[in-house]
Image 1 (tube, rainbow, N blue to C red):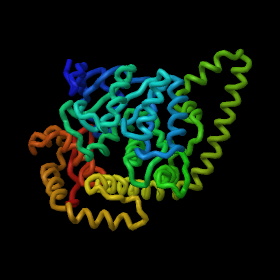
Image 2: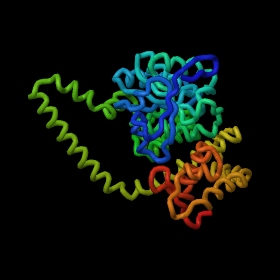
Image 3: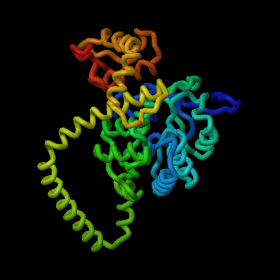
Image 4: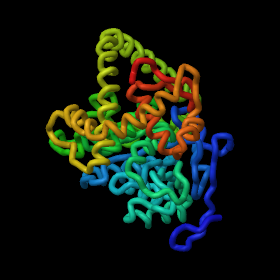
Length: 379
């Protein structure tokens, strides 16, 4: 038991990767957190089905309506919802799930003693009082550092079987979460939006990059929760079941044939698009990190690569110092991230953040979970 700020005593559970209660889904991703701090219903971390819902902090009425509709119907089917407890879409998704007696998990970017944003303190306690779960990879007394938020997003996507992005600016935390989901092999859904709206630039861009355009919650439910269909179907007589099964097989075969033909025609084009998407996702993350550090609006019509080059020059000394220390330490022999942190005498959270960026930018390679080698001739 531990006393949080305000005198409230709560049982904080500390999980490591050897604990059988550690989320199984997270063990399947790169750079999974070595430790997790958990409040509330720990069983939700290994729920049968989990859907992530994320979006803009400064959402529109359209975004609020969509978030409520999707969170409501998904929760009513017994599917757990995970998000980041940020203002806007995140909060709506959490709150709607709880109002429908649903299950929700909030992933924080700091310690439990520093609830962020302050405006969501009520939601923090509502989640706990309503049987939800709150987790963080940071110890309870870790202060809020906005640079941790992009890193936190890999946990949201890692816990999810599928991710829904409701509204997002062109450069946003939600686009980073979607990038992680894509790299983790998760299905990404996006809500189409007004092409002139700032909150639609991110979601529309995700759809262009291959996210599935979705307009009804049922589209996600049918994909994520196949047992629902099985239960409903089992109430029909055997004759209808056989007929339905045959129809499904025929439809599946027809769809497969069409897809095969389409894949042959589009294989080359898709390969090129994937390469462009990878570069674009890296660009999004760099922009988001610079956006957080310099607190400037990067959602303007300008050459964003030039902005990156300009700002990176201002921070290159610090950036290269961190990069070089780790890069020179690594070789062609794998080294565990904990050993890197110990040798540099730096917090594991800080090292993890640097490691992720170095891996994304191609300086190092993870050959097995949390073991890294250096890529030659990069620095």
